[in-house]
Image: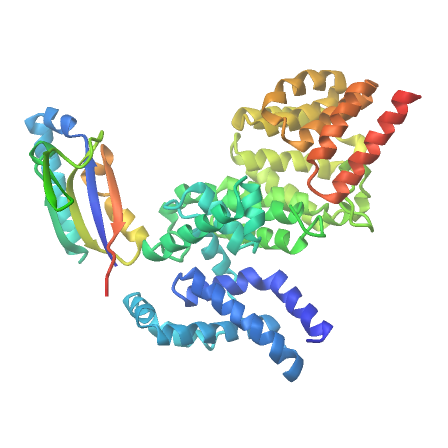
Length: 116
Length: 414
């Protein structure tokens, strides 16, 4: 099965991190991504620009409404994702728990709905 | 269908349903609905085939085998299900399993761990365990959770859908995952035991086969994890409580109170094993709630006669339990033990502080009524018995309380 691991983190806290702390976490992410590839779980992964760059789009009555900002204002924001291959939810949870941000943020684990 | 075949089928379902179902769920790669459907089809087949061709030598194996064939037929027809099995690399084992006809006890453990997966809410975990492991009807579970049947049915459907769609595995977790998973499983096992020990409905107050199942699973679990004190504590608690099973009901099926039980009917073998496990569980650490409860049960088990019971020690143990689990029901039990050790006056002071929390709880009023009765306050006693009768959940209990109500009425008028 495929699972999308959505990484939610407090952006403000991220910004407040100093150069050294940022470097350490980058190194951790680098190692983590390497281990996911090595285990053959890797499908895709990326980080997102902060929600200050987000634009929300809705179409109502045929009219496109574009607004500045994310879909919802929340304490933690979506900041990146991993799309992985795992045999079951436990394997996905185990991988999610090793994402460096799991220690300060929240990882949402969502199974991919395969539509035939 | 002749009565004997019908009765036998009922008995097999009562004793082996959970074992058969848990094996089937494994065959169906964790698809609860398919497993339940297949078992249902097999039961229907049994009602027509057993009377015609005779009752099979091993009825439980027959049901499992037949249900397994029905499930495999569905899987063969259903492209999507077949793909899922292939994905799991399980198509080969599927056909091998056709040969293997006896349900493996570990399957039940697997089923409980799946039902109690932390990706489900605690309520869904317990409801699903009661539904699939105990086979309790949805309406009974709904009553226990104070919701209507439809709401509970929806919650069960949602939980089973999540198990299937989110890929919750059908297996016993690895050792390092155990601590996080164990508490919910122990609670579920104890719930299964309690449903057997005092059935919430039906004609029987006690359903012994459920107690036996729960003890069996508790034993597998403590063999798997000999270092977990709570697992041992729970097993000790269940054995000590179950040792009194034969003495707990009389020939009319009514409950016999602990102090009136014929203690020669208690199961010595279970008591000896329970006491041994209890000592081990209690030696390892304090503050383990199943261990404390086992120690309370052990005090009763050790007393050859009711009036030899060390109530002082039981009060101390309830106080210890109350520190770990400060719930109104534990406080009520503490008050009842206090009445036995120090008299009803002192217990009344304790129990009356619980009125706000336990007003809708029958045993609270029954205990209060008993304290008033023993101190000769007939008006208060009558009032409390009346509330206890109104809240009684089964007939034997209602008969007992109504008798007491009549007693205090007579005493008041005399």
